[in-house]
Image 1 (cartoon, rainbow, N blue to C red):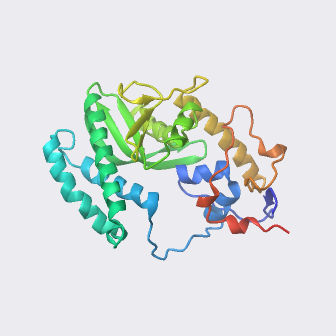
Image 2: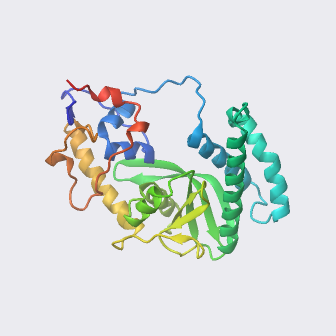
Image 3: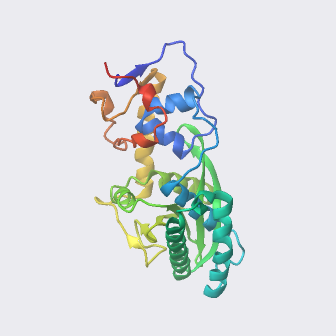
Length: 303
């Protein structure tokens, strides 16, 4: 294993037509992984596999929320009608996308999931009502530009309040420790990217929030939209636009390395060197979870 890979000078490298948070996250924080996935186009098997545990829970909860908030009456439905809707659509989504939970011995898991998703959606409906949200769009496509060209994404929920202000809510199944830490350190890059793309479209910067489904917690850096949220301000004080600027500086730093044909193998087991440190105004680096790295074996072997 080596900390840096060097491509031959004549090696062509085709970049994706549109960048996304997923591709940029790898480019910034583990460039060799980005190289193998987007440069070499080595893909994980497309064979059908059954997801389970928190991945499945998050997928089912997202799908149910998408179905509900796509309804024209999502913001006006009363509690009794919502309970009826949930009793019909929760088992339908489980049958269609989570049938593993219907297997013998999984009754407790299914019951726990149902309780948590119902609690989460009930709490989220209350937050939207308290914020005087008048329009909600689920899975809104976002397109725009960044320093490297075209950039696209899809926001879980885009909300518009009575006074015309917009907010982006990104739903996560778990992460009750991770996402508050991101907001406190002003490192919520996915939300910052979505906010900038929506700003480019509307000429107005939206508010941002994480909603943790498992615990029904709404996390925000400020209370501009959600007065009843769990506020986690940046410390030291910083803003989402400042995060966007530090992301841009980090991208320029990595892009200069790519132009030179060098890619960092950013794994904790390989010692860093001075080239691993980004410029002062760029986002600080972090190690991505190796459990989600499909290319870990291709990083090399210990002698």
